[in-house]
View 1 (cartoon, one colour):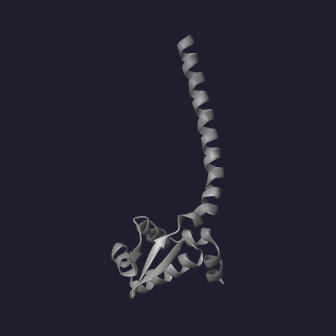
View 2 (cartoon, rainbow, N blue to C red):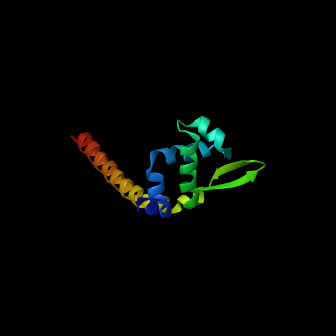
View 3 (cartoon, rainbow, N blue to C red):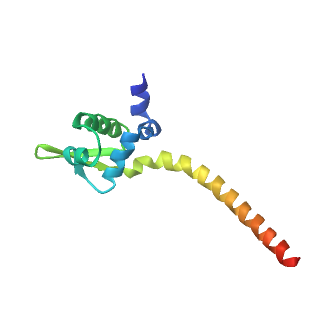
Length: 113
């Protein structure tokens, strides 16, 4: 049951730390599974399992080059995650703006004394 929700949802797919580590490695560019294994602390079967999940939600794509499969990040598929985060970024910025206004008021009160 958990497998279905993970593969159908970008949020659940990136919730797993090992998958985020693989995505970080793929930020550098297209890589073969063996190279990804060398860059992370996981076995080849584990990396392949995580790549399959990431592929199913569209975060990673692959292509064949001879006998190797090369994987690359598809950052456009992170858009739902980015849209969700944008709401919280806006709320944080509004709070920081209010804090800035408050500090300016305190500074002006201190100068007028």
